[in-house]
Length: 594
Image (cartoon, rainbow, N blue to C red; front, side, top):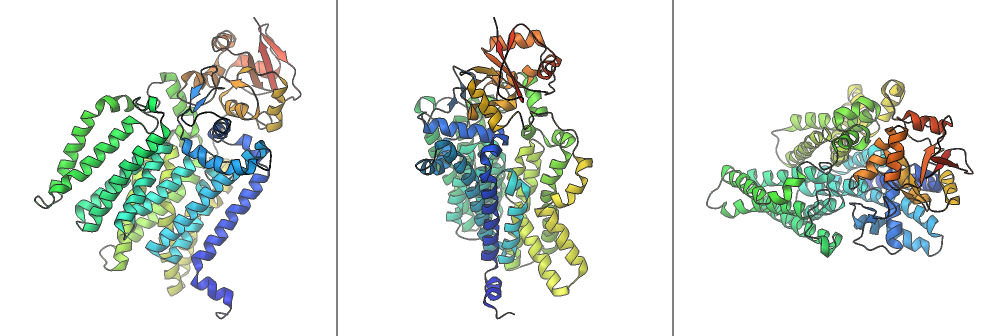
């Protein structure tokens, strides 16, 4: 059998075979999901839909530097704190297809291709990066962990995922491999620094993880005083500074470059980067005269404190985070109702099943990786080099778990180390099984493999007991493409709607909306969330103050407001709201009357 060419090829090129199979799975899934994209896309996340609206507006002539969504809270609109670089990547697929198909269809094709390409690139980085460090068998397992784990293969990188989280995952994967790369320190440092800078240009969610990676590089340079570690630190720092500056200049209009912003790459973040780089590099100029860790770490802490004090006028307003200036009731609503913004301890109370699906792979990878690292400590040679790299990956993983307690969505950052850790653990277990044929080892391989790559196999039978309460949202029939399209029978209007209807309205219809979940407009956030908690008098006052011409409800929907619930059920009629006939029964549209 070993002489069969196909078997021989698989034995000599296992990673190629696994990568080919994984990419085939990704492409087939993308084709299947893309075939129904017109109906499916409207059910995607608000950020995915809003991103496509922003790309459409840019292609229609809106300025590169102008990221205002003018049909949200018209006429001024709302400035969306998103990167045009992501828009450009999506548009790079939309525009060619628009030459031979309608723009609406080209948009959906681009929406299917973009995240598929990001996932394929992630698989290639994970595969070849893990192979270089841990060998081809570990790489095969790492690729399988990546493509099978729902967090990576489905939640953030399936067809239609247009928000920036998939790009951030890819950048963090690149950063992680650059930080632990065993040779070519200058090249690794440059690639890692540029990946970190680009991640920051897409959003600041990755900031603390990048800080952790930077501390790891700095620590290696302090305690491992080879010239290679110093070159890695210098290259990483200089590339981070240069990349951040260039990406910032490409994103920010010249007239706005002196305006401090706390929710995207701007002068406050550039000042933090500058302080960190100076504090990290300056003490090494005196390494020859003052050797030892104390003389490296001490001045770094001192310079960091001095630098932050100097930059405090820029940094002070940002300490409270992007939601610091919002009304307290809105901050509480974001922390308790917006799923991705919830801290872990709040998220797990209502989303236990999802929390376990996200966290079981992380926990299994870190526990099994820690056991492996501990069992191999004190060794020498190549194995010890691999063990040192495994230890660094574990440090980043444990650091990332701390971030999850701040916001559940930061699990995507920890996901950058899980496949590599899982890959090396499974490769070691497989080698042990082939040597001993132990049933216990085989069972352990099964447990670790399922725990890291496919926790849903364990959780699905328990879903009825773990699901918990589900937040009431608009039904699929109300947030449906054809249903929303029927609203275009009405002349352009300014609609007061619930939060999760805002982005779909902008994408499907020609109407404007007064509600969408973007914190740069507290009014837009509060209109659709807290606004639909109000009873009749307060709701009428809010609708008129915000300039609404119409109110949109989902038929039969239960709202916090008893008035709106009754109105949606057809049990209430009021003089100031005139029903507007629609050619669907899923929505109720009312025109405001004087």
